[in-house]
Amino acid sequence: MRDFIKIPEERIKILRKNEKFLKNLENLTECKIKVNEEIEVECEDPLRVLRIKEVLKAFGRGFDFEDSLKLLDEDYYLEIIDIKDFSGKSKNRMKVLKGRVIGTEGKTKKLIEKYADVKISIYGKTISIIGKWNKLMIAKKAIEMLLSGSLHSSVYKFLEKQKV
Image 1 (spheres, rainbow, N blue to C red):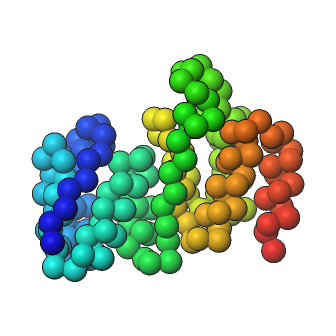
Image 2 (cartoon, rainbow, N blue to C red):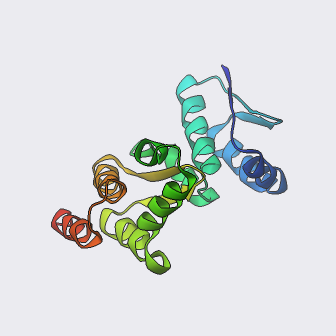
């Protein structure tokens, strides 16, 4: 089976510079990956093709190689939240919302990652999360609370209650 995935050009440039990542991904999955304007994935196992596409999509959304590779494990998922759903088309509002999720010196983002045991990437117009399903849903809820205007203290309390 052959499929294609498109990721941002600046992320493709990083892939081209780090051929080791693609070679590692090919070795782990026994599939062929070619990088042009789009990324071509070729493999006999269609499920593996979907997994590789998720890994590459995560990389395209700003995750590093190691975090992206977690998606080869079927227990891990990728969730992408579109900030435009909360900000409308205002670029200024989008910056404010990203800032709310990041927090002062990255505090809020780090707390969500710690309490929900997930990885978060804020890139472009999206906030992406990698984690196990139940943990990912906790992080998603916390982020959506922030994007909807909840106080940071309310979100921190929500996260504390979830950590059992």
